[in-house]
Length: 264
Image: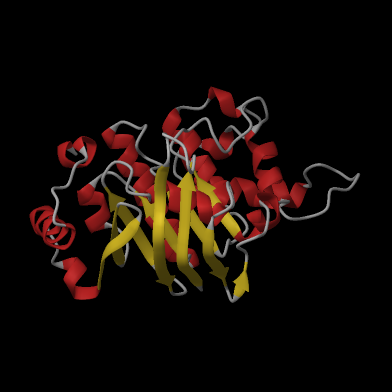
């Protein structure tokens, strides 16, 4: 369903600021895989998600979704395949628009715009039902401006918008990092619920090792622009933070250097 084949990306090549961000990334995801992605500072986690989303072109390699090579498609032409939630709760929604208007935009992603009623009665009822599943009372605030919501409410709404039209791949880029622990846990629980109910192929970048172990059916660890660990099944279920650090040190020959990950 998703194949990354020898994907490479270097920023500022042939300058003093040259940085190899992706150094031959190879990865295969099957339909329904929920993969958590962890790694040290500058390991290439978010760069991988940005490469898949088409934020910038890769230097080499192929990105294939459902057998379609999207390597050279622009960001907007591949957007209909993808759902994405960012680290910043302010990203991914239009703050000055109403909740129902944001949902309507998400529902029309990939469609041609026409001069017709913005939101029909049937659509409004559908949005109300979807919002009720979040358990945040947003179904009673559908005409509220999104900018008035808390960070957790906004991130939950963004998650719903990203999955309203079932994407072929859901990208979660440290989407709970800016939230307090209790709110982050709530958003993670909602994420898992939506992913499992819709059988969504998902990549979730996180700096929290415990979350990386607890969520999903696979865990991959990146280091210096490569995937160095891919743990799934029973091995992942038995995994501990200590064991993960040991495996990282053995495979990379280095110590794991990410204060946020270790402290969390």
